[in-house]
Length: 219
Length: 226
Image 1 (spheres, each protein chain N blue to C red):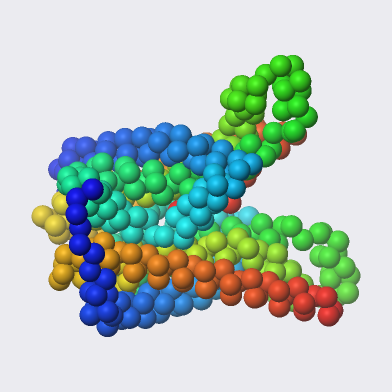
Image 2: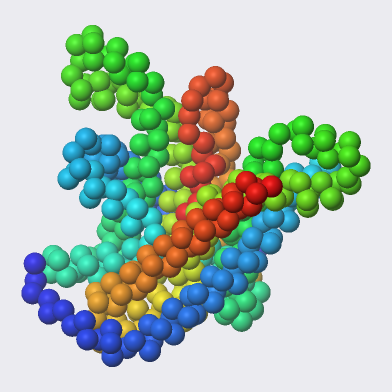
């Protein structure tokens, strides 16, 4: 072990950069979370309910975007498609994640007993009503745990946005390293913040799940 | 298209490194993951708890952060600088072994306890029963999930770009920095990654179909995310 003098003071000194990074990460994560959930639900529902002549397009979307590394997608939207940094990061992160969410939603819908579809049909509901009022709410409650994993993945994959120059947490840890040669301390602080963010997602998802289950029990 | 053809040899060398990195880190994280899974299932809390903490904490950290960690941490601990390739391998193995440990633990739990009891009562020791009966059966059941982890690793190698390992993505970037034709180059890169990962996912699905004929196994679906 080489003697390394820890200097945790740099964290206090550069807390402005860390805070800026945290805000940027939370911003990117929050937007991407909403966009990927919306896209994922749309693609998942379209793939499940459209006739084969159309549904294959959404199957292709899912297979295509989840099999390309996020960093490649980020670079494509930023350098080739010439989007600004934040839009490029949001599109890259959301499209990649929505491919996984679409599959989760699809399996959630398929897990609902067919008798419910028949019951809704025989009480005169249209397909759209059936999806919006009967199938989607139940599917969403069922898939809260796997959705939570995808949301944690959004937090983790948001770090890749640093490669196109988005000044989020990981980027700022490199900034502090460049300014002070204190990579160890900066990386520790940022790692702890990521773990805290992931925990926050876990706690929020648990909260949603409990609320949803209470709602069901109340009828 | 000419840009791609003219620079194909350089990019193919990068692709070779990508393939080597993914295969070596799959083997490494399988070994480390088995070890972690066995610790995780140990009856002694002082073996179990460190494994649980490692598995759960590492899965909350971005891979890119893990790569930086290894790049900073190894030189501080050993006093020697580390090459990008070694750092990338260490990070990929350290990161992926936490996922592998959960795959392997789930795989072990698919093995019926009756089988273990039969092995034990025919005179095999606990270790023999684990190595010869439980692990081979578990391995078969977790193949689809392992294929999914391989896909995640294959995509993950692209992040070795940031510490300067010339794998496929970095090789393509080098060329883009020289000729600046981002549209062609990144489209080509995306297609190459897609072809590899999609082919792997088809293999995983075929394995899953074969296994699902009346057998318990862990789905690859839940294990795909990076």
